[in-house]
Image 1 (cartoon, rainbow, N blue to C red):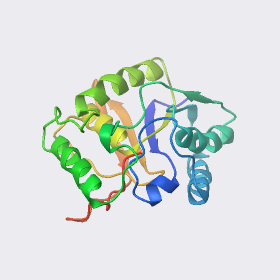
Image 2 (cartoon, rainbow, N blue to C red):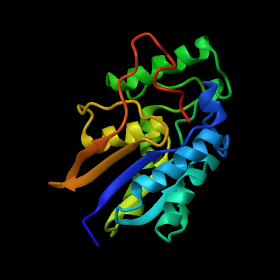
Image 3 (cartoon, helix red, strand yellow):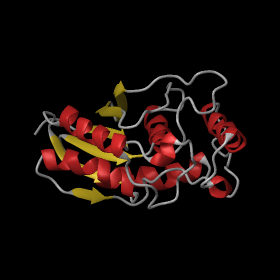
Length: 210
C-alpha cells in the first residue's frame, strides 16, 4: 500500500445547494439528479487511486456521494461523527440575499483571522475545528494509502486551513471538489485543491454551506 494521503471531497449537489438555501443540520437534503451524476464522476476520478478507506459525515448527501467511490474499491462507507457542516443556527433553512450576506459576513471573518466569529445561534470556526480535527486523528491513525472523507465545503475549508496553517491560502470548494493533503515534516502539505476564488460582491459565488 502506498503512502498516506488525506482526500477530502465535498458532497454532490442538492436542491438546497442549487437554490442557495442554507442547509446544515443533518441529515439534510439528498443529492439531486446532478449530484448523483457528480458522485458517479467522482468515483470514476478516484477509481485508479489506492483508496484504503472511505468515510462520510452523518448527512445523507455525503453518504450518497461516498457510496459509488467506496463501491469502486470494494469498500463500505464508514460514517464519521464530527465532520458535518458548520451549523448555521438561526439562518438554517433560509435563502435570499439578506440571509446569505449575514452568513458570508461571518464566513469571511474567519479567513481574516477571527475564528471566534459566530453564526447567530450557530457555530464558530473554533467549534467546527474542535469536533472535526479529532475525528481526522482517529480515522487517520495507522492508515495507509488514500483515505477519502466526503464532507462539506465550509467544514473542509476550515479543517484544511488548520492542518496547513492559517496563513495558507484556501478557496471555495465546488460540489465533489477535492482537497488532497499529504504528511510532510510532521505536518501536512497541500497536493491539490479544486475550486476558485469567489466573485467579488456575489454572495452566492462560492455556493452556500452544506
